[in-house]
Length: 309
Image (cartoon, rainbow, N blue to C red; front, side):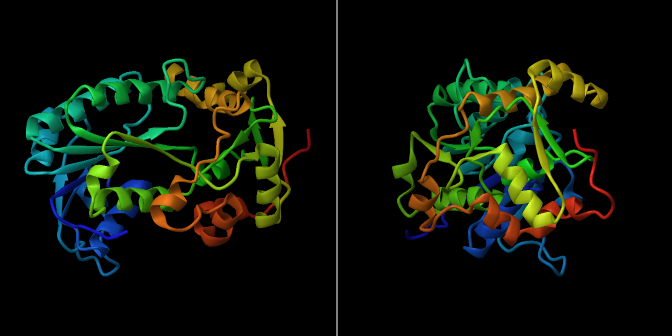
C-alpha cells in the first residue's frame, strides 16, 4: 500500500492507548496532525520531550465542549474519533463530537467502534456504538468504521487480586486484539493513497484467534509464573462480586455484559482485516504477552497465590 500524507488529521483521545500509538505512526509518515486532548501535559512527545513533527495540539474539555471541539476540528480534513468514557450520556457525547466535525467542515471521520455493534447487542456498550454509527451515516460525511474487539490488555486486566478471572463468560471465546494492531489499521486507512476505497466500509479489527477465558488464564499462568485461574460466574454472582467498586449502573452493566457477550459468541468471530490492511497477521494474545511485558507487569507481583475456590 502506498501512503499519502495530505490533509490535516485530527486525532481525538491522543493521550490514550490507541490515539497515542496512532500519533507516533502518523508522525513517522510525515502526516500533518492535530492531537486533541483534555490535558496538554499528556500529549504524546518524542523521548527527548520535543513535540512530534508536523504536529499541533488542541485542548477540549470532552466531546460536550462544543466550542473546544469546533476549534479543534477547524481546518481539519479527517477526524479519527475514539469513543468517550463509559457513561449514561456516551452516545450524546459521540453525537456532539460528530456534529462539531460537520460544523467545522470536516470531510471524513474514521470512527473506532466495537465488533457486533447492534441495537440488541448483548454487550451494552456495543449498543452505544451502533447508535453512534447510525448517526454518523446520516451526516453526509465520508466515513469508515473500525470495529475493534476487546483489547489484549483488557483480558490481562480481568485478573483479580487473588489471581482469578471472574465473569459470566461460560465457555465462550473472544478474538481479542492488540492496541498496536488497531493503530496500524488506522494508519493504513488514514494514509492510503486511495482513501476513498475505505469510504462507507466497516472493518472488524480482531486478533488471529478466539480464546476461551480458561485458555487466557493458562497463557497468563505461563507468562507470569503464577497460577491464574478462571471462574465462570453466574450473572447474579458477577453483579455481586463487582458491587464493591461502587460503579454506576451503566458501568456495571457494561462490565458484566462484556462477559455475557463472550458467552453468547458475539466476540468470537476472527477477521483477517488486520492482515489485509497492514500486510501482516494480527498479534495473538500470547505474542502480545511476549512483546509487551510492561503492559501486564503488575501481574508479576511477588507473594503467595490467591486462595483456590
